[in-house]
Image (cartoon, rainbow, N blue to C red; front, side, top):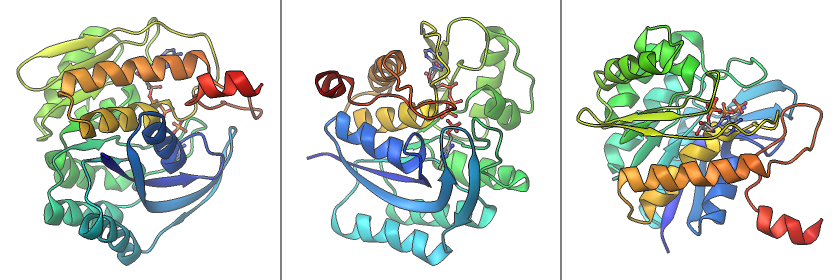
Length: 264
Ligand SMILES: Nc1ncnc2c1ncn2[C@@H]1O[C@H](COP(=O)(O)OP(=O)(O)OP(=O)(O)O)[C@@H](O)[C@H]1O
Ligand SMILES: Cc1ncc(COP(=O)(O)O)c(N)n1
């Protein structure tokens, strides 16, 4: 069986972070494993508190998985501090996984800063060069590229800027722009626009986590990067179309809508 490791934060509300990642891996038939970087007390409305995990514990979790089970693809989500970024980078340099999908999580939907503001330099210098694909949303792409993004043409320019930081490829997610949520891919040679259709819903908690995990799962199964992203885009579109109206805030993507339909 193919395996995928998520290195990310825990969301007690189950909609984002490690929980979204493991649900996505399972739904796509890949064996999911985790290295938890932080525990968040969180629900659909807010992040109430965050406790970062000790650096040694983070690298021990990663080592335990690589030393015994093996990893076909890695997905990286919330890394709260520059020290955690350095620790994860060191582990990636040691184990050299073939596929690394980096979701550069910075701020939660509710506005809580999940990455220290001064840690962006480490993200740029240490992790982008180790990534097969980096998947910023619009505000994250603005920070990584130091450029305002108000339109699709701006996304093309930002892709070029981000590629200079050394990832093998970039996918800027268009969910935060007006209009249909189109995501733009660039690998230094070709651009590809993955077109979406906007689903009118407030239940979009954890959609970025889900998309990056779905890409990692498809890469673990041996698909090419463009095929993996296309399949992951179909997955997130269906998971948003059938998203769950639970909690008072942004409800989560639905990973098992076929199953839930039978249970309702
Ligand atoms: N309302 C929507 N309908 C359909 N697709 C959407 C919608 N909103 C976002 N998407 C798609 O979902 C994926 C995640 O995009 P988004 O821009 O929301 O990422 P994000 O802000 O990192 O998500 P999050 O921070 O909630 O994890 C992208 O493929 C995007 O195009
Ligand atoms: C542990 C963790 N990781 C990632 C996110 C981002 O997801 P969102 O932007 O939907 O809040 C989050 N809220 N919590």
